[in-house]
Amino acid sequence: MTALLLIKNIGMLATARGCAARAGAEQGDISLTQGCWITAENGIITKIGQGEPPALEGAQVIDAKNRLVTAGLVDAHTHLVFGGWREHELALKLHGVPYLDILAQGGGILSTVHSTRAATEEELCEKTAKLLNEMLSLGTTTCEAKSGYGLDLENECKQLRVVQKLQNTQPVELVPTFMAAHAVPPEYQENREGYIRLIIDEMIPYVSEHKLAKYCDIFCETGVFSAKESKKILLAAKEHGLIPKIHADEIDPIGGSVLAGEIGAVSAEHLIVCPPEGIASMAKGGTIACLLPATSFYLGATFAPAREMVTANVPVAVASDFNPGSTPNLSLQLAMNIACLRYRLTPEEVLTAATLNAAAAIGCADKVGTVEVGKQADLLIWDAPNLNFIFYRYGSNLIDTVIKKGQIVKRR
Ligand code: IZC
Ligand code: ZN
Image 1: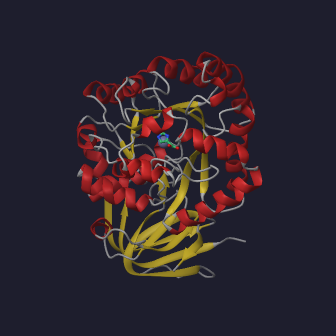
Image 2: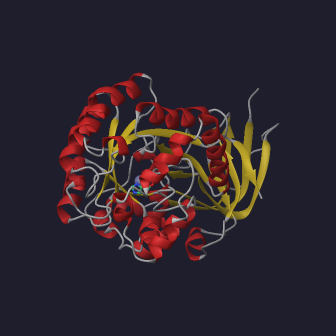
Image 3: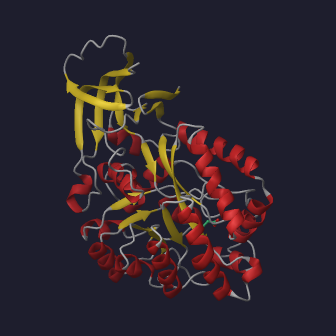
């Protein structure tokens, strides 16, 4: 049976266009259509028009009541699967203990490694399903999910299998990233070379062979992995068909963004203290800057030079960075608000960042990220009359209806 959908009385349709990341002036060049309707068949958008909507026999009809419609939000950077939380670190943070000091003392990421190793696959599945349900209510319809709290073959694969299972049991589409190079685990503290060899010789080939991940990410940071180590690991990943991503210039600029451009990483993440040579290298290498403004906010850090990146023709994406340490926040809406206010990107630029450019950063811009004929009907009806409104209001969930592949999956 064909499933037909008609959304009528759309007050404003705001969408980027195309199947590839947009940079420079094109980042903010979106289409804004007033008074229109959308039809979909079997989860794919078939027509977008103005004026009288077509009479579609048997179609499910949704009245958008003159409100804003956009593509479903795409969260291109999350550390979604983990055991426990880290609320005990809040007091340390308030006393001014830096993020990297907490990690160096065996806490931070390593504390989450401990609780993730202790959790069963079923426990992680149940916890992550609840998180995804909350993300969906907040408008996220596609989401990247990293491993990186197992730090051994068995537990990294446990995290990635959770992502694989949840792919088929709830509506948010998931894109898995392998990130064993997130920290050096306790048992290798005296032998980091040994851990790097384990990642390259055993984990990458296994993850690739069993198709457990599409991307390979690394935490290139002072006291974690150097730029030289990052290069070695990401090039090995690339040889096995895993596409490189890199956490670069979050706290210290140690060469991560320059490396990203040099090895053709699909995206570099954070870039809070990205130097001009990093921006130039990303522009040359075609790397997307995946910015995480809620993390700057939560860490009390400065904000990435987003405007300089747009000016240099580096496509900018914005993601939540949801994780139990530096950003325990699931709302991409909130990250978008902070991006607009603190990077001073326009609403149009941020919409592209959290939909089309985010989709390009996780390899699905051919099917999601814009509202266009032929793309998946992943749509949001906002409790807002226009695009500016969602950047002006903040702190509330402004999503009214979430549609995934042509089906209503959330409604207020
Ligand atoms: O658990 O602290 N920055 N990795 C790099 C993180 C933050 C996640 C964490
Ligand atoms: Zn991250």
